[in-house]
Length: 236
Image (cartoon, rainbow, N blue to C red; front, side, top):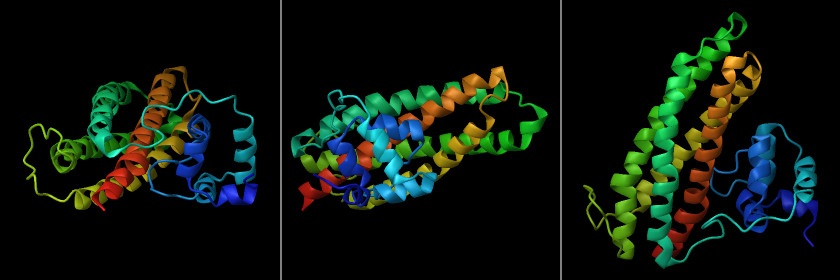
């Protein structure tokens, strides 16, 4: 049996693979499980000001896990194209719809005077992140994904990416983008929590920001901890 001390030295990925339902707990706690590959569980807890033992206690109390989400437990070489399609259809396209809805909500909300400073920073951070993520997804769709598909013999769709391109360099760029997005998301979550309950009209913005945090982290996790490691293993 794995001791609590051993668990705290495990990576987030190792914990999620053994307990897929942990993701729902991590999301509830605001714990960044996705933006940095191979992040240790104890380090993720520290960034959020959480005690690893307390999180482990909560993890033990979770009900029996449902079947893992698609691809959560890893992929084979012949599933690279399937996972890329899954990311595009379940994350890229829904992200864009969420961004539009969130932008409208951000423009419409008027904060109470006591929250104007917090709101100003929150709004700027959210709009800046949306812009960055739009560019990030375009880089994936037109450079990284076609390069990966070309290597495994899948369809490259339309892109300006040469079939001979090594996907390693764009993968590293995506990982750096993820790390920065994770930091911004953490700041957004903290500001969102400070403003929670400030007015009834803020509830829509609050819920949309939580959805943004959740969906972008799930997207990043699939790439950082499933797609990229599997593809690097195949390249070797």
